Image (cartoon, rainbow over all chains, first blue to last red; front, top):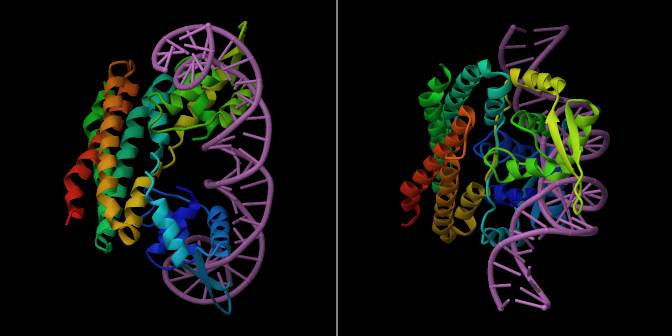
Length: 169
Length: 169
DNA sequence: AGTTATATATATCGAACTGATAGGTCCATT
DNA sequence: AATGGACCTATCAGTTCGATATATATAACT
């Protein structure tokens, strides 16, 4: 999914500024399956506005940059709808942890148990965060997606927890 | 992890050409947690060679481009070892499926059950592929990593399978 | 026999994206 | 009073992607 569609989709859930979109994809309930930088979001919003797929209302603020609140237009909604008809592309998962684990065997085997323990702690942290978010989710789909993330995190945690003793001996 | 470290790591497991590295990260047992294009691999190999971290043996071939077989140098092994000491950065997961699911609720709710069914089929396919690879894995760590992937895929599949009826009514 | 597809292998290039940063205010904690 | 984080827009160098060019061998269709 390109940034354009991502922005359209987020705006289909409610109006937002570029800053808020960035926060959603980077920290919010979108963060475990998406990511985008200002350098891609702001140009995308500008272009989508030019094309009439979203609309921009400037809210004047005295002591900081005027807030630009974007909303989805009817044309934009149609484009989004059309995008959702085609099959989503396969996931892209990049994990330094798994790569490190694989490479450590040859050059730094003593590091492996630490690596796994740190990762388990990381999963626990993620699980807690997602669990806390669960109360705040409203829509059926957003809850479903959040719990998908939870299920995956828990499976990973359990796998590591059960399997780490393979590297103790 | 940048491409440079990824190349060092792969070469720590055995010598390879750029083409083979690309195949490993794109299709092999690395494919579910890494990805890289020719446009990044070839320049990285050239630069690593200039810096003496890897070595290049050209194998002359009559009717196709000379094969350049890269191997890790002692200096490269040290750099890799050092890289593995610092904590791996958090994973980056991009899922068009989850985004589509979330966005579909507002603009194309009828699409959701299809989306989920296609995804289950996709997971089944991935699970089969990973299971088949299991026999071929040799190292302790590579088997562990592969089975991590399997555990995650299975958890996702089961979650979708159990939860999809939430969207039938 | 001829066409098409896939595998081998290198390499480049425009487009897209990241990560860091600039610029400035308000607010909370130390 | 000072440091750091939240807010909000925006740009830019550097990295990476995705597609493509080049060239041959082999296997599989028609």
